[in-house]
Image: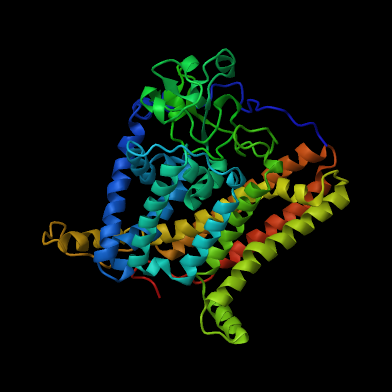
Length: 499
């Protein structure tokens, strides 16, 4: 096996990398200490409107802001921002704004339990969210959607009022985990500009924070010295000089504001998010040893198939046959069995078989589980491509549906300032969007194959083809399933176009 580097290396070319914080206007805005708060306020207001309209507005989902914005607009914009920039949705997260306000009164003193300092809880919550979305038809219920938003605010507030740092973001939040995995292939990441500057830095403010009394006088951050804190450091335990990639990074920019040397930027990243090289990453360790993150990646990829599968007609026939076979009327057992097959049995068979063939053909010294963990990251681009094609389909075909909903909501207040709702507004025709979906899947497969090839080169030395071939087969099988799904007639959930 090829030797592994022991610390992050600069994978960029010799040319000056792009730095978003150096762009006039937007760079100055993001470098402002209160930029995050400023950009969290609009989502907070929007979230409050969605909650109120979800509880008290029309019960028909296509006419309610909670379901239209939540399940059509938000998800489409989310994947597009992740693709084009990075994890800026976590940056503008309104849940953290409420949490920070609460911490003026509640000072957490506990550390997150050591046994839970992994992704297993968040993986379970991610699966639970996908399952509840299908079982309870969340897209069709403004009331339940509003309660989900309330639960998110309450969860973030409760957990981070008891536990220090950003425990909710790092170990609990399902949306955050989705963003972490997806942003591995984003074009930007928060990282240091010059590692030489960090080598000469003695204060390590990017991780410790800056204090009025000076870092040498502050040993342990506690409730008693909170008022001495000028700028907190990274709450997700990502030490910038040793950070690589976007996993666990919320783009909060605390490290940017804390660094006294102006040495942290939002810089262009490598095309594979650094996943091909098995680095020791600050706050994470080696990807090859993180079975929990590999499980998150696997659920992310196969969950994309499951979420799309739940919206095509064959799944309804399958659920009906399974319910009859199980002699039950409640759809939960049949749906639960489908989830188990798609998210547990199928990935275990595919990844396990590919790892066994890789070991047999290439003579790898790794055991089967470490091999499966290592190569599972090669599916990230393909998994993201499936989410992008799926969410992009709903967003593009229903992008204008929010206009009449807003018109109707304003008119319901007694002020029809925006005119009569134009319920016929939809979006781009399906015949145009579907070829775009196919193109996205083709590019996603190509990106995954390139990443898998780099993994094989890194791990197998000269015997690349034998390690590469089994994972190519896995990628193509997943891609074929995704292609079949997007070519099926799909429910237009959350819009008046729904069948």
